[in-house]
Image (cartoon, rainbow, N blue to C red):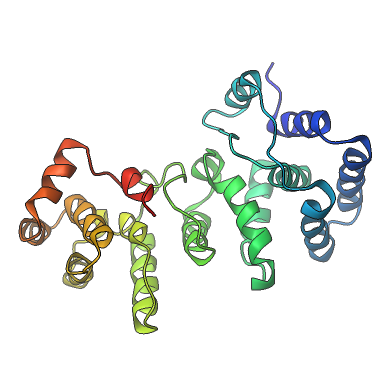
Length: 264
């Protein structure tokens, strides 16, 4: 029988941490299980990097195989010690999958003062992990994707981003873009990945046309990808008016959302 993600995280951390640090982590988990208040959780999560450091989590090939066996699609490569410890804390409190989803969603609504901590926790849960794709309902899923934009996290490592796309998320992304434009701020090109498949209204197509007319190459690439995914005949007309090399790159597979995200 495969180890659970909880058991794997604990084993990896206890193997790497000095005894006093591993004991601190065990004590924190025990305290939080006895007093799972928001304040206690915020304090514990904030103390993790100071107590345990931000070094790379040391993983062997066998550890990655164990991660895949524990949860198909789970890829902890690139995690740091503090990320792993924070996720272990959350898993220890979350219990069942639905409880963890609620806990993570609640944490995503934390104050901006937790912004730095939130990004590390967010990416450990949301990036290269099948859990949100499998367990989050549409509301939590949409909130998670929006939260990624708020904390300047990339979208491409989120598994199921295309599979879980939905009209409401497309509307939310367009509203977010309009708010940024109104404030004179930039909009991440990745946002339009969530819009393209549902860009079937005049308003949505006008947004994509605006992005297509941007002087920035990366914006034009994003617009082309989103237009190529749109079900509206008018989208093909807008795309045809753009640099032909963009449509050719999309058709050949040279331009994808993943390749675009690598340039961000």
